[in-house]
Length: 119
Image (cartoon, rainbow, N blue to C red):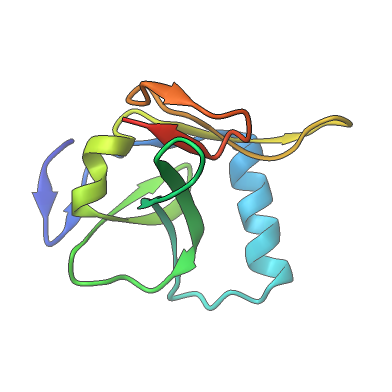
């Protein structure tokens, strides 16, 4: 996962596409998200397949790793890294599909909703 110094990883464990970055920056501006909030990426129990993704703006917690990807400051609970390592987050804005997508190489199976997976 990279070298960790003061809870800041030098190598990002996941990536954000340019489309995702553009949408996240728009959300930050439209919702007036404070500058000291990071993008939180994580997992939680539940969803159709066992886990659901967490994506939102939040303050850094003591058990978080922080990193930057494509200019976005990201926080992730250290325990979630095993589920999210190598994941790519994208944003689709099509007629039949609009929203964030998660391409996770650690998911053994996913659900049709695209936000739930099993590991």
